[in-house]
Image: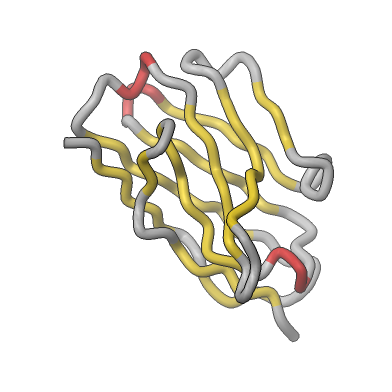
Length: 112
C-alpha cells in the first residue's frame, strides 16, 4: 500500500521559509517521479513542482519558480520542498503525490 506522509508545514511570515518533507513507503521510491501539489481555501488543486526518479530533472509552476526547490533523498525515501520568499498567496495545504496517490497534506499559512 502506497503511503505518503507530509510534514513541515506551519505559520510563517511573508518572506519567510519552510521546508516540507514527505516520507514514502509501500513502493520503490527511487523508481518513481514525484510531485508536490497544493490546494488553497476555496480553490482547486494546483500542481507546484515535480522531480524525476533520480532527482536530476525538476519542473516548477511559474508562480513558484525561483522561490521553491524540490529535491529528494532516495536513500531515505523522502521528498522535500524548500520554500523561500513565501507570500500570503502560498497559503494552502501541500501534498506530495505519486501519480494519483497523495498523502493527507501539511498546512502552510503565510501571514503577518
